[in-house]
Image (tube, rainbow, N blue to C red; front, top):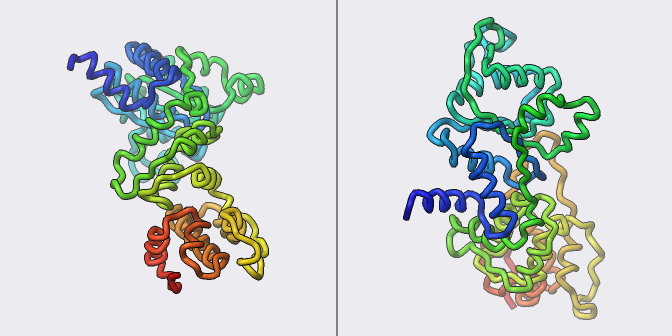
Length: 352
């Protein structure tokens, strides 16, 4: 394999897919990687902007140097200057020691500024000065230090509207966006979904990988994917947790694509299940609301999924009057799979 082929293989391993949008994105990455120009990545949340930034870094002359990422919207406004430029000991309350900022720590490499549209207006002025002069001054210091860092920024916001509203500096936009690169949404590259699913499953044990029949895959490719590639990755993980090792059909995927369906209000269950046949919709609708987590409290996603799964099993067994084979049908599971899940959760029920 030649050097060029190696480079192509490396880039294709980062940007998965053969769609026109994916191919065009890879070509743009190759082109902008050859220069040292600032790049602004625009695209919806979850579309993989940080992955694109890393690909630009890895394809360029700075590949052997540091790559650093900072989310401008996740850092308190009073700390963003210190995060970027560093500070001296005693420069503010809590500054117990000198700290090197991201610009210094990424010397010679690439600094990725995610959600640049959320940066405070006064910080935009300071960042503009750094980009123009290629120098920084630590908080609490007067020493000017030269830096050699390529800046790639990203946003999902409409910066044109932000500029018109006076919330984002136009001169900073032009300095950051010497090249503006649009990262496509997943809906605009739906044909890449099968390849992306295989990519996300690559590190999974064989017994938890799900397969999808033709109807299920067609539904996945028609889905709007508002959360983009991030949403697809979460879907693949959710499918492996709930249906590991199974082949999923249309109804299975429809339910997995709407994880909040299991949180619908409990419906009255017929007193005589034999008189009114139950359906998979009855199972979903019979599950109680999940508790809303306290603000700021971490969510244990795996535990939440297991809680929902256990509730669904109990509801299905109730609707099926304790008949495991019927409960399995309602849950669209194999009977043996349901028995295994019941054993996992310690559900004791007379098999029928």
